[in-house]
Every structure is written in C-alpha cells, then in structure tokens.
Image (cartoon, rainbow, N blue to C red; front, top):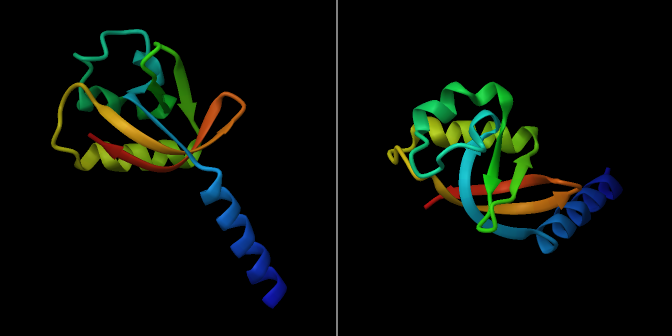
Length: 106
C-alpha cells in the first residue's frame, strides 16, 4: 500500500510540475465558430452535451477532456458573467485536447 501511495504522489507531482496555462474564451463545441463576445453563458450551458473548449488569441480552438467539460459546466452554472467568457485554464495538452486541472473565469 505504501508503494501505491508513493507512486500516486509521484504521478500527481509530475502532472502539477508539467502543467501549462492558457487564456482565451470558453465556448461550447457547437458555437466555436460564432461570435464569441456575444456568446452567452446560457447557450454554453444548454449546449453542454457537445463539450467545451478554449478559443486562444490566435483563433485556434482547443477541446477540453471529459473531466474538464464537467468542471466547465459546473463553473458556468454558478457564474454571474453572462457574455465574453474569458478564462484561464491550467492543465496538460494531450494531442489536441487540454486535460483540464483548473479553470477560472475572468
């Protein structure tokens, strides 16, 4: 059991050390090509089934992993901001998907 705990600690430490941070606009997959500044929180919540991602400053859209989608939905449901959903996202890039560790609306 001690070896398992130690291995788990190493994995978590490794993930935290290699985390990256991105800023951009959170949007649901269905609306990624639409007007981001006018895209509403309500639309993002109702389109949650398709998942979420981040539109970076260069216009590139990067999808979130499943747990990132769940975190994003939870945050959007309680957010007070309605439009222009700028966010700071921390995690690791796996292929063309961000494995989200933390998301903060700005």
